[in-house]
Image 1 (cartoon, one colour):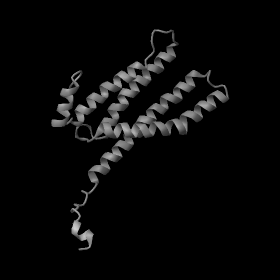
Image 2 (tube, rainbow, N blue to C red):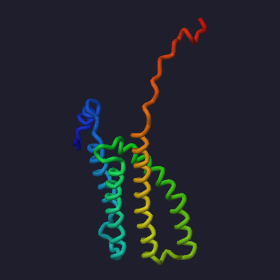
Image 3 (cartoon, one colour):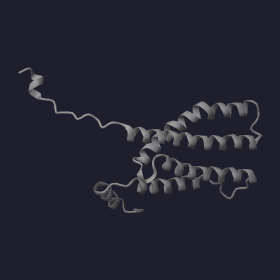
Length: 164
């Protein structure tokens, strides 16, 4: 694993590539720091807020691990590319279809003071989100292993195209 020397990493990628597990390690460490950055600072927070932040942190890490396993684990292929692209699309769909409507409902009916209910809903959605991402990853992995090999193509004969 490379932490600083980008040229050595690039050489390794060109010569050997990364195994699915190596790519997962890079991704998992990256996810760890992203999730860690979401934890609260020393500002005064209610104990429920601390629990909520810690829960999202743990769900994020376990969700990434769950998705890695659903992709086939060490025997899986292209985890990072699949995960990030599916995660991106699912995030947009979640925000548009559930996130915005729920926020509108909470603020339109002045339910924002019900922090426990709001937190419980968003924690449930976080679990659901990773479950769905894992479902889609498993589907892609399954379909990739079942897919027939692409037909062999022959180069186009330039004389046949010229009409000669």
